[in-house]
Image 1 (tube, one colour):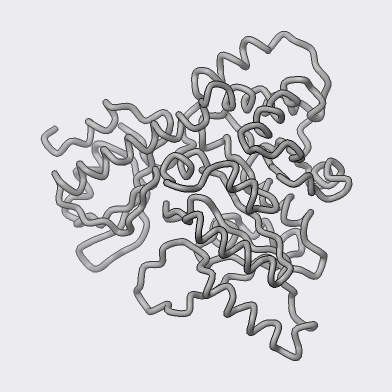
Image 2: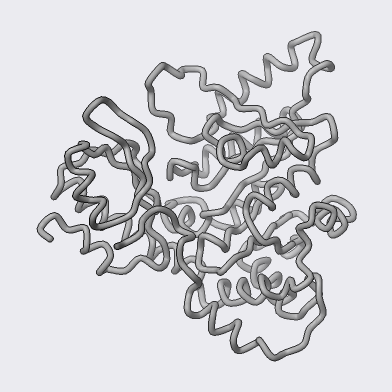
Length: 349
């Protein structure tokens, strides 16, 4: 059985594991003060062209989102996002549990049964903000304090550099912080024609570089690119139970991921396999795309008559019902996806 359910259903890249083994016997300081974490921070700063960055290592994505948003928002503030955002749909109310409302911005042109592209569009965001600040009772409502987007989105789509720049201008116009969830950042960077780490560092107030889904056993690197971390950030992280005593476990992994372009190469490998899968399903099987995704998440509309046969070959995720005869499914490649795994889905086999 080949597994395409997610990009975190495997272990870690061999180079990451090897570096953990090589450094295992060395004694270091705890709580991020080890020299492995220090070197990893320097490598990330260099890759981002952001020498003043404040960087913190956390264990997982939901933990990171809840911790960072609670740290950058005032107690009476909420965070704006699109309806399909991870914090709005798949984090069990983690952000709300910190006391901050997640405010989903509904698309202006949303029609019943339409397929959204997973993006927070600037026109929708600005329209929401204009309406909020025009309301005489705004002081009685949850005040927007930040904008949350993912790169890539939950539907595998990408923001262009121009779209990010426009969102940045809107955030500046309304005094909002821009936070980018980069759980799958390696795959977004590999597929994007014009967004890279330096541009993200230039445009975002805070973002994180995902490791869990991108070659690490666990771990995310939070980057405040302008040296703009909130005061006492370490205490804030610990208050959320997110401060790793053995922080070197994540630091060592990011040291490996940011050596010899491994992080970007991991992304490129997953994109190559996703393209192969897409071409096979569209050209050989005749499946239609549910959404046009350039990244490692691929969505196909599959006739129900073909599903059982595919289920015998691979695991994948049901996305939504299209009609009485067809369903949309998600297939996810990763750094670990092999040629043999893609070939196992060949129609002729």
